[in-house]
Length: 121
Image 1 (spheres, rainbow, N blue to C red):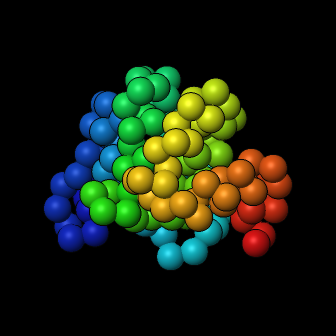
Image 2 (tube, rainbow, N blue to C red; image 1 turned 45 degrees about the vertical axis):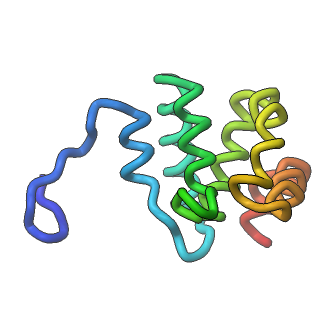
């Protein structure tokens, strides 16, 4: 497949978690299509290896050593919540040190209000 720079690129690495790392890029603002793409990528990565998938989700939001992508981080956390609420709850303690304290409140708000209201706001 030809890329934007007329170079060759592969549609997949054949590793869903590696695809997650390379294909989930920061977005400027939330959109329904970007959120649906992220949900598909997270579900596929989760099926391949849940532990690596969780680490990749947190790498999205990590303020110092990650992508600092808050929109994708929150959307990915909501997808993890759909897959396993216990995983999200057990990892909440990591949010303040990897992302920031305000993110804990945002995660709780998004879980309570649901994806549709979160995207609107």
